[in-house]
Length: 308
Image (cartoon, rainbow, N blue to C red; front, side, top):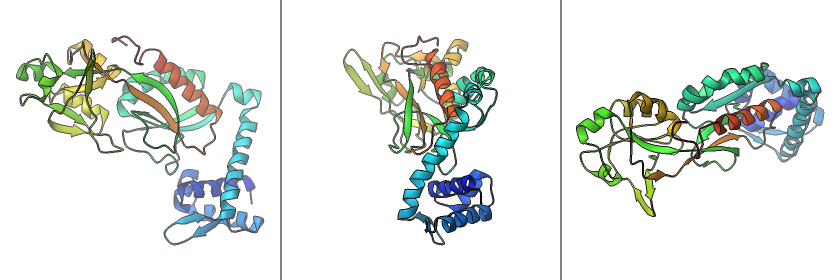
């Protein structure tokens, strides 16, 4: 029995709650994972897991061993990457999930710079706005906008995105150009609704100006839960929408979107990188996080000019 493989298999079973899921994330067969855990239990002479037909629960001894195994695996990773050659050239695979507009408009265009700095890091990029089970899906980190609702995750604040209200010229030609945000609640107007995938709730629109605060309760004809679809609906003239400026700016430059209520402000949207609390932050993950923070500091935060 390879004790490293056995500990890794056991840790993944505990984190995913399933031999099948652990096998998938480790690229092993379920039989191999089961045998490794059984061999580990035989060597330690304790029962680490309680198995039923529906779920796997860690025993009291298993919980103690899990905490120690996580530290051992982390120390081993540090020992390998702490060597001067490894530290200078972090390597390995990173599994990252990011929102679709962020991937298309910010991250992917900048990735050649990251690959030039760290050619030995391979990125498996998931592109979605859905909720991700980081442990169950073996994802190293996610980039998300909005306040984090899962308090069990560790997170690093990346930036605060400036938001604005926009509409397509075709939409404004039909409805007229509103001079005050309250006009969006008139029957002539509509918005494009954005539903948070993690809550199903519509993203609220609250504007402020010189002490005045107004939350728009406009109707919508279409609501979506994907950022690219949201932008496409606005470009098609389905209604007014509020966007991070990095998403809106190309369409504003081309004349496909027009800004509204420029003397009003929306609360900036925080953006975070989140990762599992018990997952060791490897050097490859650390340099990726630092690189994303650097990338966003170059022109996408709440203090950036509108042309960023």
